[in-house]
Figure 1 (cartoon, rainbow, N blue to C red):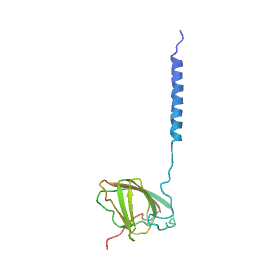
Figure 2: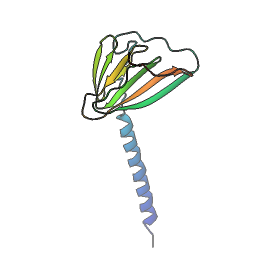
Figure 3: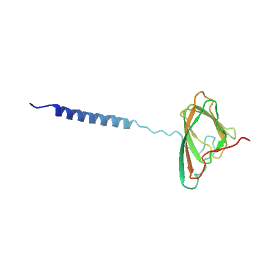
Length: 146
């Protein structure tokens, strides 16, 4: 008597392979890329400086600011940009320029300009920041209150 079991297994394997291919192909077609921000200016309109000399060093930080709290006044000696992934963030520079951010907003930060961020919302604000520095450079300098 002829068994259909091997034939059935073969058909199931072929069907499974074709299904996997079609699902994978369908998901690849749906991938998208979106530019969140692209500029040679920081959020307050100042020109971004040239990259620092030396061996490049990239740092990526996730910064969490609790509700009702502020980051200390500080400067960044290196180019940096980020995306607020959660909450709200108010940013103000030394010249009085202000920016209100909500989750999903990108920011190109000011370089060598005193500023601070404040979470005026009710949930923690989380921001991912990418720093393009060089070995030996500090990415953030906290400035003492005067």
